Image (cartoon, chains in turn cyan, blue):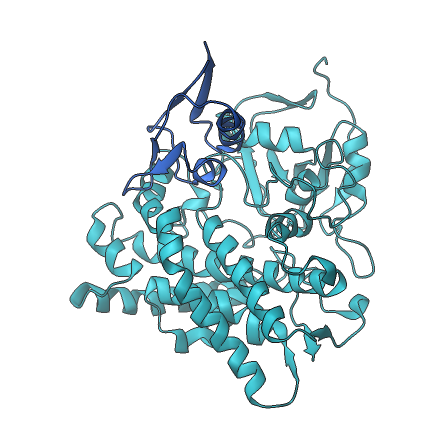
Length: 394
Length: 65
């Protein structure tokens, strides 16, 4: 294919809308063209949307792109929404390139090995059982599955791993919610960021004096992460550790309640990750040199949004991609991204989802959604797609 | 014959290889890939291909000798 500059379609930033399916049907239209479209960002800028699986994977391993939001062209949905720069939040290594990204990631890999994840499974099971116990305890036979379970489980797991007091759950969940809502006012977002920083700084100072068997203590002792970076690293792990998984667990629970024949099948987790693609709008990059993507010339200094749901619903790779079908091979999905930034906690997410669904439907087999699916409060405005609440009964 | 090589310098410890083929790949204490068997045979060749394909940092190469 020859490299050309065409007039690509221009899409609005918020293609997810109440009453419309997710992923937005426009993605399929873009894939049928050359896979690229331009998006008009609420901040006024433009960026390229990449919708094909092949292109998303190729771009994410291309050395000519950058994850650093301070680079020219890096997509900023609004003035303050999106990935913070290394200057704004030192240690937020999602938004950094080599060598800083390599150093920070390597300081953390040992915390998320398969062996570590197997060792932590027992803790995850206890936390999941505890949440279900509390749901059953009041005898009402109804609950908000987001607050009482889907959000509670990963919040308590990541808090335990980091050494953050689980009792402070409400505090860090509320601040995170402000940070991951695209339309949050700049001042509110800055305040939430300051509050989490202040909170974590106190905790880090405490662990410096009296180390415990937790990740923050080990980060402090590692010598790999500077004092300026430790709060940012801890904040990233705390937020990424509960927000993303919560959305996966809640959306997946709805899908399983609608498709109960699959409950108990070991293949559901990978297919749910592919099918829901909650991190659809998370992968953003800046282009450092002119490159060709799907036959389209993309210029140095332009921005890219690599659509996770676009790639994971690409019929060229996943037949009948719009259907939830755990019997397919979901292998190759990019729910956790791809390239050197691929999600560090992905194997923790897999364990959390597996344990969550196994225990939830074993212990509450009559669980059902207590509202029409179409009226559920979906996170149309979230950096991550998901549910604000999920009323259930049994 | 298929021979596997891994690049521990580029490995980012996502552990996709261990998930795909735990009889061929492991992680050291730092989370970096270690090769348990460089010469897979039969079904293990298929698993090695899945591991190479899944590796997000493309740190696994299969050499068809």
